[in-house]
Length: 366
Figure 1 (cartoon, rainbow, N blue to C red):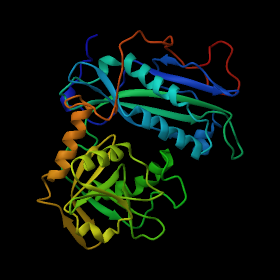
Figure 2 (cartoon, helix red, strand yellow):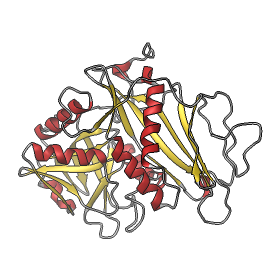
Figure 3 (cartoon, helix red, strand yellow):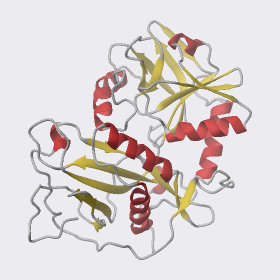
Figure 4 (spheres, rainbow, N blue to C red):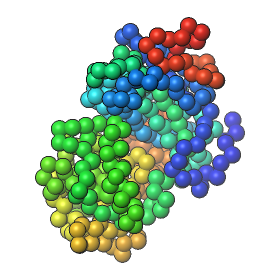
């Protein structure tokens, strides 16, 4: 199969159409088998709970072309666990673990020509999502759900790539409430943060660094990613019930320990930013984005020269990327190889079945 005709080394982090997405429908206590689709739109009942009451969650992971020619996804098992936790948190029907993993395998396999070539620096971004599609007027869970997985080839999340960015501490706006859903990957958390992120960019910063909403004293995370810092041979990352448990951060703590660093997951007072030797943001989309400077009120801390990634950030980034693309042995079994096989689930084109509580009789529900 020939690769798609794309400028692989120069891709940005944006949506591009691919060949297929996969969809499952939950109703009457059971999930459907799932079917590949070519259309990119979803007809929804106007009273769907995802539109009114925020019954929606999603995941993000990546597939890579390995050095040996295989295609593999990174830590899909952990994404399956996190999506299950997010679904339960907002009372949606959880996606079974094995179904999640199989769906990712199927959709990546069906879109193999869009997996960027080895050495291009790009990846195939995989976006699973669950939405409540059952109509409700009262505030209560839906009785129908749709699980969808689509993919798109992407480059770096930040335009600068693996180069330090400048961020500002946000004190006026909270990303998530204490005892809320900050630890779930739900769209409302990101919508809540747009005000701060957009305002920061208008001031010339790349992103914001949130403080805990209760005390306004401890670091939580940045807009789209977890935060970490290096000091005195330690890898330090915030401990908070309002932080999304980043799979990338989880991986980096393992690699940091293997490099001889002591990992500290604890409350991090914001004033400690002036003591750090290096700092960074980490997540599936960004992997690691080194931080060049942090503005806190009328003070600014610059790490190193502000334009060159620190040594530890460079080592961590290189090691994680090397595992993801098969340049070094995957001793932790983080990669799941996607075997080449004929796509399962007949692909449909044209309008998708209407997502209502009474399926149309002239189509087969997904």
